[in-house]
Length: 148
Image (cartoon, rainbow, N blue to C red; front, side, top):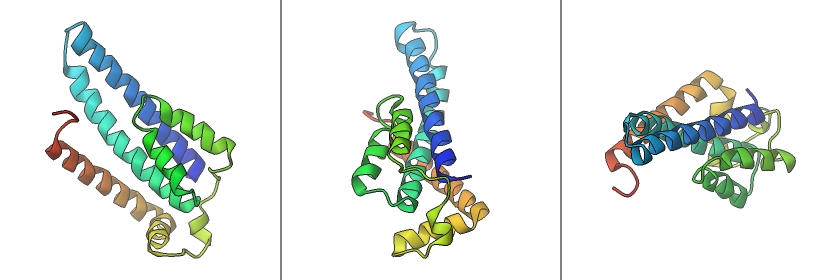
């Protein structure tokens, strides 16, 4: 999978889980029918949110985004549906290529070396990504939801 398709899929998934969480919040706080939606969709959204942030960092390193662009991409995960806007924004500006730069180019520095290692061994990289998402989700569950 290339940077453009990976980023787009995760950005859309993040927006979908936002929509599901908002539906769950409507059911809980407006109709007072159930809080199951918040529990299920809140967890799903949290997992995809973390995955989106990790993918943003990986793509940002590989595509040589400025720190400002990486921060904008990360910030767009907070308001609902802004990840889709950022995906379109980055593509229009040529910031999302259809090939991984670090697969064929020598990495410069420790961060690029780490990213290159994951990209050059996709199965190992995907496993490392899953482990990172699980670990960060565990940390988030220990810390608790925002505002608690």
